[in-house]
Image (cartoon, rainbow, N blue to C red; front, side, top):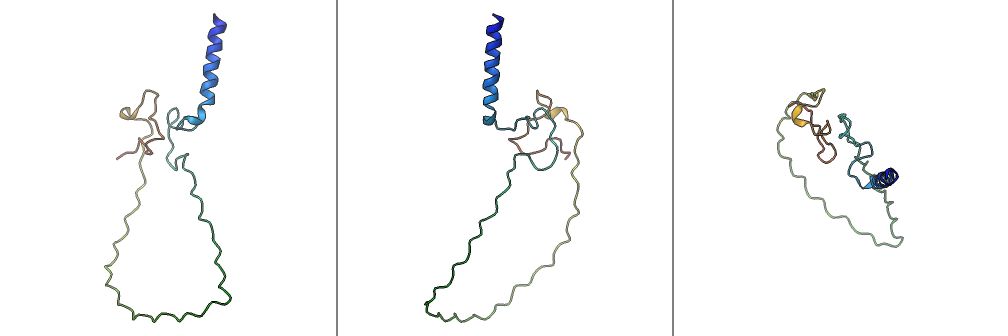
Length: 121
């Protein structure tokens, strides 16, 4: 009987391991079992650069097109003076999980919400 139970447990473990890519959070359960460190979320993929398209060469026998006449410039509207920039305020974080944000795992789940829960308001 113990061998049957062990076999069932091993099968369940292997099924869990094979289903890891289907989970919505990374392998070490970032934020569920370890506190979230402020910064860029680990799942943020870099945005690829736009492809560079080379300019097409001009047709060798294209007829010359006269340029359109340039309209006279319109005076720009007066611009209001710029406001002074606000001073940057560093975010203040709690060093521990406050009781309201605790989940049953000990740390709040991070991944679907995208916010650091210990931020002091």
